[in-house]
Length: 201
Image 1 (cartoon, rainbow, N blue to C red):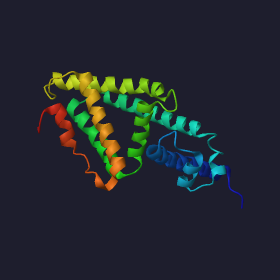
Image 2: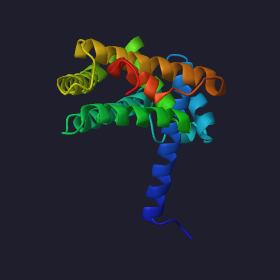
Image 3: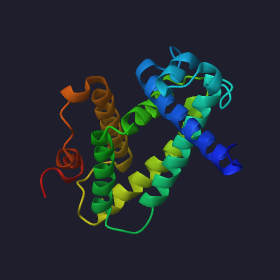
Image 4: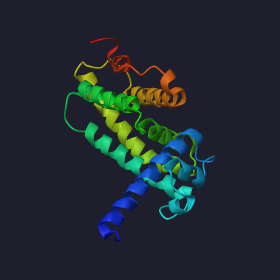
């Protein structure tokens, strides 16, 4: 019995998802330049021919991942711009980030791909594409820090510099998590937050 249109679309969507998940893993561990479509196909458990039915090139596939990253960064920036207790919002963001790493659900690799885009600008232009949404997120975070300082929750310091240090810390933690896997001690949320509080609260 032939598949229905809905079944075909569901299968297509599932295959694209599998390809994207595999691409994140391969890009994270090999980098963009050293990755080819055959490696991604093997990781996804499909034929190389099948992967080309969904993406014409690794550049197109990487572009889709960067678009997803940009949309995610924008959504987080909006969330951090809402009213609420500043320190609690920073704590919640940190807890979610750390939980994503601990879950080993591919989030760490996805964060690695974003970091690679920023740091290596490969493919060329990736860093510029991400810069706008990164800037939006960092400005929202810096404003959140400023609100926390005004409320007496966060220690004195330049909010912009504190923001860059915070995200650099998360990037480093993510890199070590991916590189060392089980050999890396999971980060402590309270320890991370001490850069804002100056110690236990």
